[in-house]
Image 1 (spheres, rainbow, N blue to C red):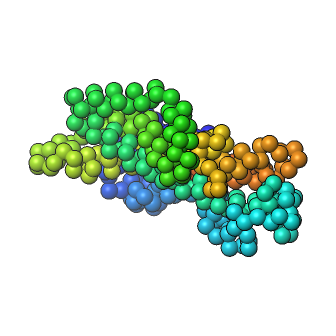
Image 2 (cartoon, rainbow, N blue to C red):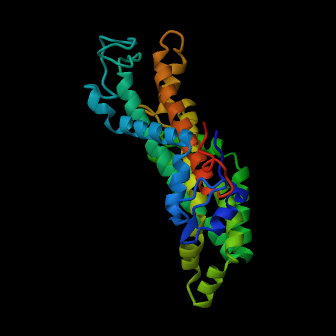
Image 3 (cartoon, rainbow, N blue to C red):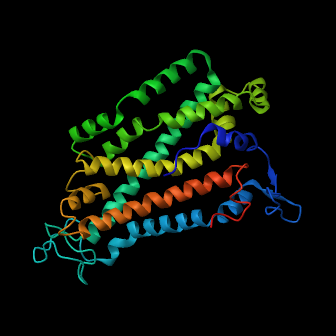
Length: 323
């Protein structure tokens, strides 16, 4: 399972992020391109594409997105439609993934459940990274009482039993997936903000920040235009791995009955419904479990590949990728 990038793994990357180009001479010369300078983005792309596991992760994730977006076009059933002539039916030509106890088509439910889980995961990851970037970088730049107060809030929220609060709030508000996005965002930005603050404390001393101050650029503009862009590699990797952690959180909450509620469907609710019939009707659990595993593993591969590609100390890209 991938973990968010730490300050130590990104300090060198952020320090070089303002360069116009990177000399294409990798650790063993494999990144050299006729002695010319490669653009930063092109170099990162070359390193990422050499990581076969990461590329496989991208392919799997894109296939899952296509399945979630277009899969309902391949079946005449909706996820809420019931076929009372085929209750708990095994996979067949009519019902590709079988049916559940209520006659609902498991394939249609899996498509809708994947859609719902993807929307929740991507939205929460985007919001938490954005909040973490502004709060962490702002605290580091302003320093003083603002920094102390922000860190005190972050540390307090980190020790709060967030999973219990998430469960209680979501359950009390009838499991609305939009409310679930809100509560997952409120309790999901602190760890990334702590890392962003750690890296930003060194960026605030850079010459380009001092020059912007000397020219009278407003503090908020300095944070948004001069500090946060130089945290790009850190934020991109945490955005990717944040999708994994959000999928797991949403699945766990829904599995326990505190997340998405019927009649809506997510991968977590499907896992909860199939857990009780895993021996008598294994398809009810196997298909949503397979989609969940593919989604989390693919995004972990992508996150690890991005971390290796954006980290100048990594040898993965230069060595030709993982075998």
